[in-house]
Image (tube, rainbow, N blue to C red; front, top):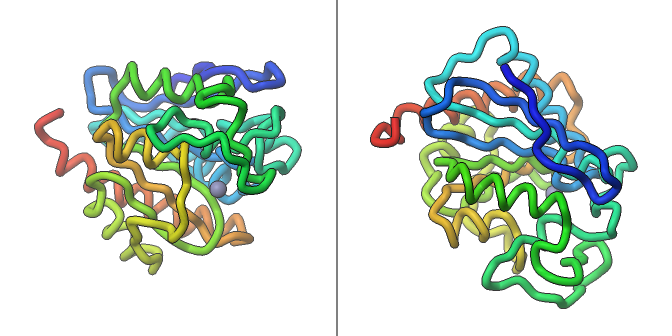
Length: 223
Ligand SMILES: [Zn+2]
């Protein structure tokens, strides 16, 4: 395992990242804490880092960023320190300046926030084969792009339903940026809000590992 600084927050804090597996492998990005008031996803990422720091079981390169919105995580705030919802700030074709409510503030312009800039830069330079973004809300596996196989496996382990839309528009979101506009399959993984840490570590860390077994075996041409 190697750790590195993924980028900086609006308040100037470093965003830690953890890298597993050798270079020259297909890369996978696992994100937590895009919304700072969703600790379940941060915990799932920390559980993965803990397990993989002892033994990493894949022929993949996996980068885990447990708290992209570190400023928000530290204050249990959905938005970043600039008051922006990072999952509405990506430079997608459907990005809109319209502020539905403050909790969905898209920022003054697309890609205005340092956290979003770090994420977009990493994605565009590393071209991962799969992205998982860990959130918490109603239990759901929201797929954008071709990751139905991974989602089906995770659904078996969790009982969560797989959906290709969450039911309302989400302009400027990561699923659109990477999954729909860059052909990088993206899973927005909504853990049940309020789930206990032990259940997150016991169920969801394992489910993500099972999903990555599918990634490893099905994305052979890049291996
Ligand atoms: Zn969220």
